Length: 242
Image (spheres, helix red, strand yellow):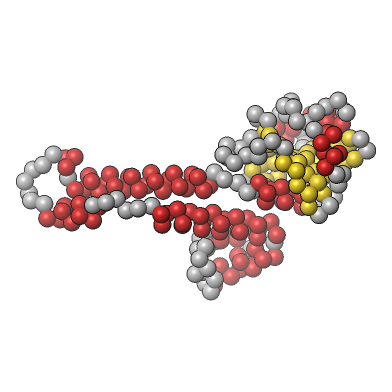
């Protein structure tokens, strides 16, 4: 079983633990215990499902819905306006409930655990066997990043589509396609991770610095992209590049 198969199965796992003894989920749960990336994904999914379940419990049933349905069973055969039909009332109530649930679902799914994204990228930066890119566009971009006069916190000429086609390393983190470019500045090695600016409502406000496992990172955004820069250099070195 690979991670995609495990994810397909685990998406049906209820967040209250009721499926813990179900044989259908055993292999997928074991895969999640063995694979850190899958385990992190599963924890995020469970947290979102719990949040959604809590929101759904808070949605109040429309007042009078039961009475309206029962009244429909007793209504006379006398012709009445279509908009006064109990079935219409029931459909309207269902639509209102659907819209409320959709709003809850959007608010839950639109949020991203950026701390978890940073942790996953820190783990990636620590893997020396995963990095590298080639191609003219990538080389030109690396050369730009290596210049001491280039300030990364200002909007940069990043063409993700072209860099991807030209050989830059691309992978997926928390559902976002991420492009990586490595460069050297001031005697230090840096990993720059770039993704198209997400539509999430909880994007970092200003540079966010995090240090884990001896690796320092900073996350920031511009109008078009979200960036995470990682290095074994300290926070002061990151600020010098920004």
